[in-house]
Length: 445
Image (tube, rainbow, N blue to C red; front, top):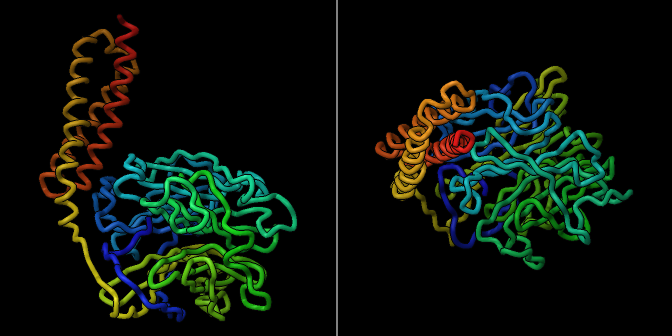
């Protein structure tokens, strides 16, 4: 699910707008330079993600490559970022990550974050180079391999195929109302649609694939959907970036003649499949901008709509040969008034709707589990006071109770989204404590 700033939804018929947006670069770029930071993937949530580690304040989260794995940062305004540090559960060879988010949990589960990434430790000429991970908090991840259709594979491993290999994902769309089985006739009726990197081993181009579950994929068509353009600035590389669906499809992509990192281009499409490229890049290493003279690529773009104005917010990588960092730029286009209906769900509306669910979560996760815990502790008495596992269980219980107290306070204050999140965290902690105590009870029986 794409992050749309300010929670604005566009409804109705929109006329095609295919002119390249004109971006204004932030004058104090780079905005994020912690040492090595590149390949940003940025998401936005007007309800602060329900997170407590950042005091419930972030509107933006950004995962990025460090050269030795994936790290996380968060921000209130998209300009000033707080470095969280490395995420856990992923290998150090994880790179080129792309993250999507569902605040209510994908398919009603506790999983709110999904990631696809390139695993640099394996051959690019196998599908093993593309991996998947999922997380409830965006910090602790569990990764797994993906599979592909035997007839329409994403990666063939055969030279000179355009998709002989891959360097990972470009962008992923999530459609909760998508078909429960693969829809070959209507690509956008599927639950997951992925633009991905296909490479001969030299030339890189963007392919398209679709999936029911995000882990088993089928390639769309037989050719790249965003190919390179012979003789142009992107004659050998056209790939990593973001696709935005607003008044048509807008593809902000990386490209170059001798490397993928030479510039950022723009293409427009009415269907997300057939693209018309702008002749010149938005930004290029030859622009003479000091912080990005060696590399300028990997745009991560979010959409904000206000009235008839669509604003594109872009975070992208720059490198001057000694410092690889992330910068910011913004552009606007005007949407036609005819056939457009603007609606807005306010934070207060959503919070009110979430209160009953959050209260049920507290009852299930806190009150019922506390009764179970009390019963187990009473039955064990003082038999296990010196057992390390018992001490671990007490620590889990203390943390769970703390989350329950936070949850109740947040719900009472009207922040039901964060309250619901805290209750779910308490559930996980109580579950671990109950497991340990039940094992100890069985051993002492």
